[in-house]
Length: 276
Image 1 (cartoon, rainbow, N blue to C red):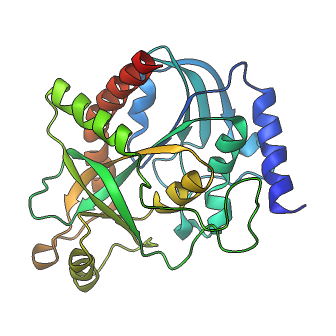
Image 2: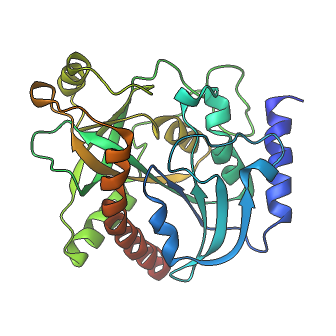
């Protein structure tokens, strides 16, 4: 069975388990699963039950899709994402995005835990992603293009939807939440970056560093989904003042920041609902 057939079979299975197609898909990064607390859940689908679907192995990633209403908007939460460092291919990592595309979902909200490269960034605050740098050494669109899914050479000049960025900024200000805006750079992981690598990322112009998100956003743009990305700044990734870091510490700060991101998303959903 080829990749296209696998995605279509997975999509058909998920479609058989839901009553309504969500308008928004939300990927929950490390420690950010508390976003699900505000959702009126109608059904859950475990990754292990979906044909041909990967299984999430990263700490803090539950491994299920949660369908329901959030602020009267139909949503699906991806409670647990896949990472390149888990040994999956780029196409396996981004299979959920293809599934969302084939379901007919319009918006993709992505979250992640990230280290702050910008000297002005303090841990515990959200960063609205304005752009990204792919430093993972691979691209999920490598290989034969599936023309029915998107063009061979997709434009990435507005990878993160400018209107959604504006709505997120408005929402943050209305809620009184301190936020940052910046560029996210993705390394493969799972090792945290060396001081020299972080210094290089700063020279590139990146404001935050992590190990996810970029493959999903590339595929979302290829498939015509509108993307909003918010990072949880969990630590200071300053090369000249680098402290030893553990995954547990990252998740602990991401948990605290997740409440702020949830409020921003909820407000953005409000604005989308009003506009529609």
